Image (cartoon, rainbow, N blue to C red; front, top):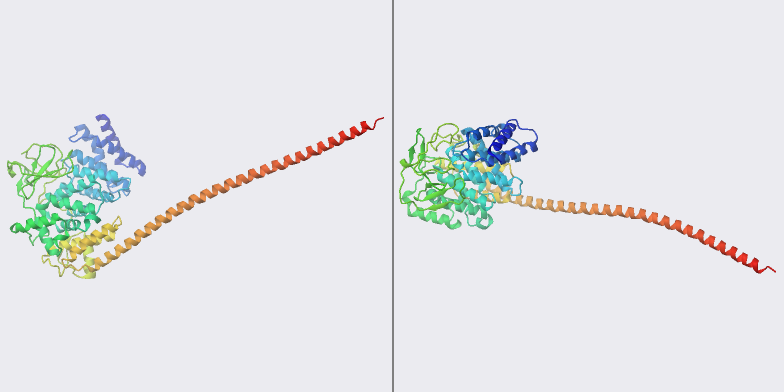
Length: 542
């Protein structure tokens, strides 16, 4: 398809989406055509191509599409938006508020990763791969969309995935941790739970994912892992060797341990900040020559991160012989093209560009006080309900810092929220993961019996539900067999009726022929009698 034809198709389909049809099938047909057209557009498009992209770029973030009720439409919209993000990278296709809405949609679409048999699964995977390739998670970090990132970690760790999906998840989670200035308990706890030895065979995908991410970020998370394992009262032997290795290294370097009590998040990234043009703070990063980007971790190693056209595997490399200083380079939040080393990149302050990761970034989740604990406003209603019914469940927590306790309370509130209002029912394996997380939290002396006991019961209910589902499947199969046998019997009866009809007709023909035969026999006998009479008359002549 020639470039002008692509542009015309983009314009036509984009204009149709500005006033989308009511028919789902017609809308999906337009979106699928748009997906094909967008996939043919390269990065750094011409001015005419940028103009052709404008109608669809604006239509895709309209309420009619971004908040559409149909799942297939949502997935197709996410595919198209991810393609537009790829095309415009490293510049943002939308402003900050719209980007947040986009990330909410993408996270909702990622829920379908747990449904491999779904007809839209391949499209969801393509969105994940694109998001990983263009390092879009960096934008979420820079916008401080902490709750979305936490939800993404939880989702990834409970999804059964293929190698391609696993690689994309590893890359995304690794970049999220390495790019974050702060690491929270909400990120570390599910990672620790995933690498328990008991999960290696039961939840092998989660275990492999957690192990690779922890290994990639070992230096970054080392101080907190040691404290977390010790405070949880869980033996290091209960975890994979990667945790034991981190704890040993942390013990050998105790002086480097730092866990401030005055901050909500326990570990702070100490990478130096520099001033880019425009007064925005950014962090040091080397731009490699092979379409990838590299950043320096806490061990001084170079960690190769994905960019467009590269594979998903991350590689830890030894530091180069030459040393670059912060004054030589500056970070770009989204790297997709080849850049020269030592190039200083200016990040514009307009709403259509990604902001640097600085204190001026917009925070996705507002904070509020609940019984003296500063928590995210999104979990406040659940936490208030918990306190109203069970009191201060963190009163005896071994963590004394209110900020530490607040982080733990947010995790509990998120779990309760997921149990109460999950759009997709939790599976038995997902509930077991939650049970492990709650056991870890209970070891910090949080009062959680009111939650752990129902979780145990939920497991039993889930087993019963699975049995019921299996029985329903058996019933459905039996009904299908009965239906097929009934149809076969009906067909046989119809054949029998037809046969009986044919038999009746044959019987009638036989009776008719017997009647004819009888008449023929009578005629023959009559003829014989006349013949004998004639012969007697002849013999009686003189």
